[in-house]
Length: 266
Picture 1 (cartoon, one colour):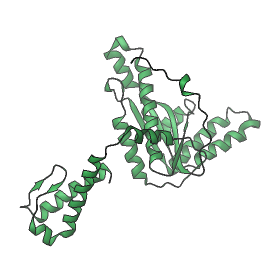
Picture 2 (cartoon, rainbow, N blue to C red):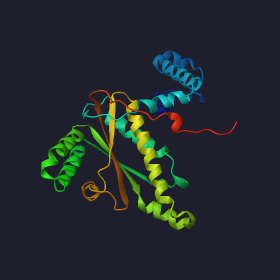
Picture 3 (cartoon, rainbow, N blue to C red):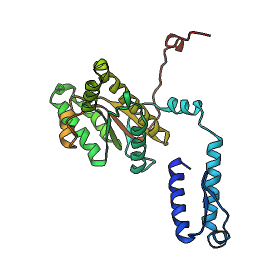
Picture 4 (spheres, helix red, strand yellow):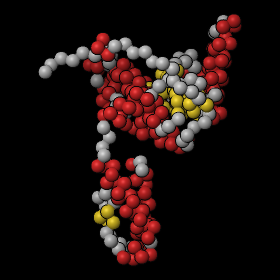
């Protein structure tokens, strides 16, 4: 059971039992329920739910997440083309993942400069129609079919996550801390990159969801802002296309790790 589900279950059980049995007392570190014969007799399902939740909580605390668990998720994150509109999870679950990622991805001086727009269904398709229209005006006609095919591939997915950074927030940091003024734009971009990776990895961890990261900004920035009423201070940085996997990820060649990492000290 996910932590969020545990929290909701706890709240619901507290509320239900307090209404049914006002005199019942709770000891709730770990959802411990003080034995109450009335509950046991009259509400066996409620009592069983408490016991199940208590045991689940105990199991979770007894088996903490290891670094290898996190690294396995990172290894499994790959780029997938093409994608379908079939998702193994609900739009609500996608939204929950995105919100949690935005809340907990670090940013310089805790500025919280990251902004996100998630497009599903017709809105997702509209994005790639906009991109197609813009590109058609600048790509040579004899080369446009390949571009159109790529746009249709993105359009065939289930949704797109648009990543922005709030330039007003960055400018405030520059004004508040002038010594680091030239650093803040880069630090905001780094935070945005972390958020992209977190959402990409988390979506793929949910099952048969694949994704690929695109960068049609700044070409599409103006029309995206107009279409979805995005604040003028939000600068578009990337587009994460996601959907159901239709095949395996391609091979991934690696430069020898010894050429990329060095260690010093005892």
